[in-house]
Length: 266
Image 1 (cartoon, rainbow, N blue to C red):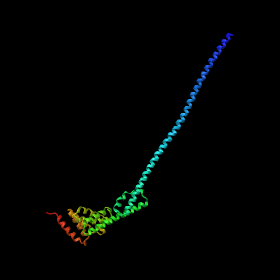
Image 2: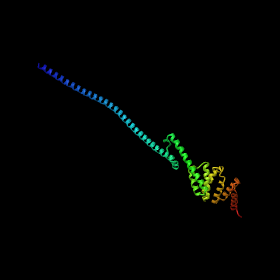
Image 3: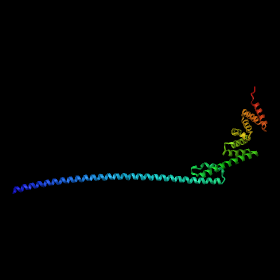
Image 4: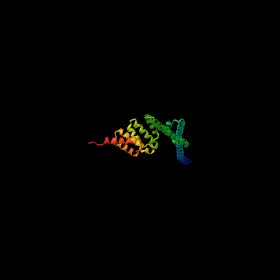
């Protein structure tokens, strides 16, 4: 009986040891499974978090970009609105110049207008007003110069004609103004300036508009400058082209006198 009990106790002990080992193994497996589950679950959450965070970052960047675009657009619109307001103010100020008859300022400030900021009607009205103001300034200077020249006030004639030419430098009327300006300059002793104006007048075909003595005055300017050969040539051309003109006889005499002066001497 004692032996049986010893064997039974030994068997029970072995069974207990085996059971403890089994429990430890189960605990180890359970802990490993728990760790594995935790790692898998953590990885899943990490993946989900990264995906969600990426979407949030993308959304944030998109929102920031849209905000910056909106700010830029708002700034552009504000600048356009300010420019439009300034353009409207300039347009109204220019309209007041036209209505007030301030022709010089209207012509001078016409270039300050921005055509892109004007309506088609405003552009047309201002263009017509600018053209009319220029024409009135030219007319005033032209007529003022002629009136001054008729009474012998050549200094005033020169000033008025220069004002007119500042607004109309080319064309038949400009050629006529240059003719009268050249004559006045000859009579005031400014031969070089007179030559330039008279040559431009002749190039503008002023003789065909009635100023047939333009070449005579050019010859006078050349003579005053000491260009005797050229002066003689122009006197001859004038006298040949206008034999019935009152100045033709004087032109022939001057040509003969200059011919003697320029003739070679032995």
